[in-house]
Image 1 (tube, helix red, strand yellow):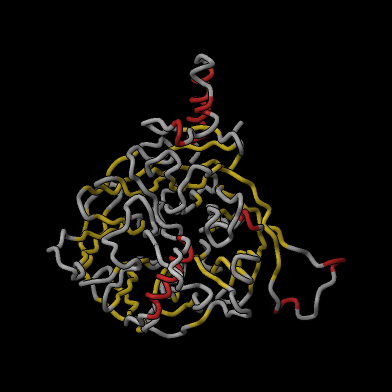
Image 2: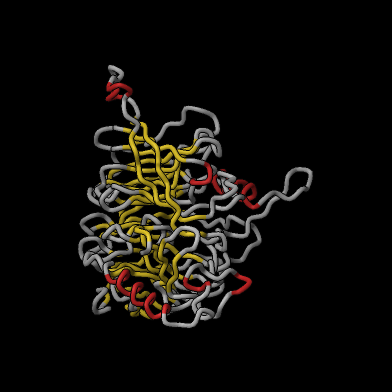
Length: 452
């Protein structure tokens, strides 16, 4: 995203020519809600971190994809996002936003890594009943907007596409079960439902505890589910795996067309969460085995080269924080330690594997971090053998390391019911995230290098 720096520098020169009153705080830090402007700033230098932040979206209510979904085209300069009533492309060099597909009932799924096509679904308005709506899956050229229909699923959802773009990956449940009873729908501004529950004595639980109760309710319902593939060329649906576990978080390897990762959803300290399986249903493997009570592992993702599965590991929950890696081909494991305030809702890794990032979290979340509302950059550092001496079986043991952190964005005004979902741009120079720090949801990017 080379031109973002030049545009920001030009903006700084213009601001330097304005009166002192006009160039006071807006360029140094985002306005807080008490001074919220109708139009959020286009760019500023975070006063607490020294890093430049730019707003990529034009319209309030815009959103980037979930942290492990690919939103970048092979050209390295185009990001696809959801905008009100459309799926749009952002030119990362010019920051121009253009709609690709317009219409109602659209859901952007991801961009193809090989073809650069965008994949999305359309869902009809429904008939007012509680029955699930059929969903039609489409692909479209991100350049021309010309679309083609792949197929229709009677119910369920699509979560991923394989490396050669021949198969889509989906999940299906025999029946729907809203996580929060008597809630008609989720507030469109947030990822989280309005979770609420009471202790046996009638005392209300915190939002975090109530969410755990609702997740457990869904897990214990033991609803029959399927993981399935959908052939991109023919629309043929094939079942990969059936279970009454709660199957979720489906991901294809970015390099191996036949390797799937999925999770057993539910309270993390109760489930063995992370698994892999082949598209023909063979080779089902548990990625992480718990060794202590209240140990949790999750929010897993593939490294860009497909060699490593990374995930958030806590031993025990809320006390010791690690980003852990597992290599499916070799079995090698790596653990990077981080501090409580550095724990993040989601972590991610750069395309070259040299850097990691986290989107922080508020004080009610699992880490109970007193000062955790930041976008973080992490530089991994291996812990070497003392005096060059190592255990005889060192090659069979976990490779330890630590993260050296740097704060990039102050997220003090962000409501974490909307997850920021950080991703590295293809040139590894910027982090893209979504935020409501100025009120409405927008898509932003922060430069990894400090502003000059």
